[in-house]
Length: 97
Image (cartoon, rainbow, N blue to C red):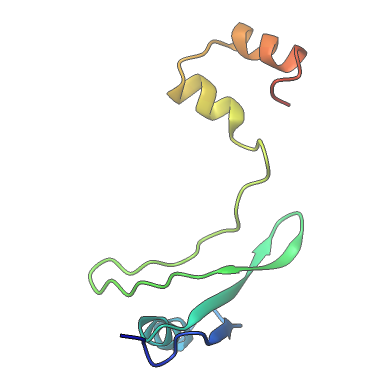
């Protein structure tokens, strides 16, 4: 069964007060929710907001998406177990920047 607002797009322009809560109700009824996030490099950007209303653990967008490669070193060393020498070889060969 189609939801009442399916196919509608909502642009949320505020992150405080009752607006995020109200917009989550629109998303629950099928609306696509677009929010504006301040990106440190690119300025205001639009992205899809939190569309699920979880009462005990409400979601919210805390920051914009990272730049391409912003966390590469952290992921490869901490999660991937690479040492800094191996990371340097990947950089020299152009695999990562």
